[in-house]
Length: 356
Image 1 (tube, rainbow, N blue to C red):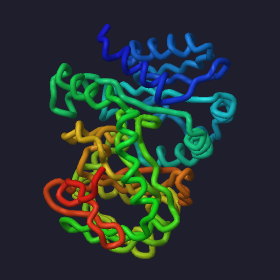
Image 2 (spheres, rainbow, N blue to C red):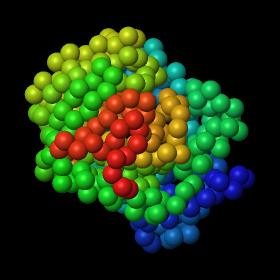
Image 3 (cartoon, one colour):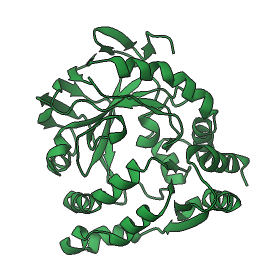
Image 4 (cartoon, rainbow, N blue to C red):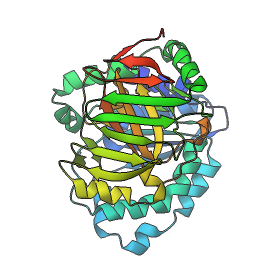
């Protein structure tokens, strides 16, 4: 076995989430992630905890969204809610075998299911003892335009780091966000402001996502004014939405265009009222991730970028916006652009102007 898999399992079970003797820990992994899933399973048992295992098999998701009726899509998952309330932590491991699997599924089906499962998702997220990761697969390597071996090196160099040390580096940026009131983003086809007054920055230091490496904060719901053009395609449900431009007034998207899959973008914005508002402003800090690979778990962490999520805000930092979706969109500031807090430049052309 690749020793890097054992090391990642150690990080997930010893650092990312807290596991005590007697805890019930949900362990969900796709079939191709068997090796990492097994190592996590062993570690959970060694700690005297009780793993609750879910294995995702190829084809089942597509069959569900292809065949499920509206009644089935809208049904509340009572057993899943019972499980998240009964368990003390969750580890999720993705292993995509076909990143385009859902490209031709009606987006309304995803919206219906997201609404039905929102309470479960919200409860799990706010439990604050979960982590999600992706293992290298041929499908992801192809999207990243790398060989599998190159992609494995890329992934493990981003995940298997000293996260306790990285956490210390994030403290100063969090302090700036905590004290800040107004954010101003300036860049190519971009001039956007919003308030963060009274909100708290959240460090992402390996205890939610893996890889990690960002600090984020929830904008005040009705404060966004201006426009932004995003730098990279936005991936959701196997669809690539390219050339996205959004215009905000009083915190709400009032105009949305895209060069590709504009109809899908607008469909997602109609999921619910909160889908048109910002739920997150994040700052990428993982300078070990330098390339956009069409995987948001990695892409939103690229050092020198910022991202804004439409939809659900995380409540731990004072966020209030509610939605069935949380859709991250990335703005690259590495070649041009900057963002300011209360008139002070924090990042310009991908470089921080404050000491971290």
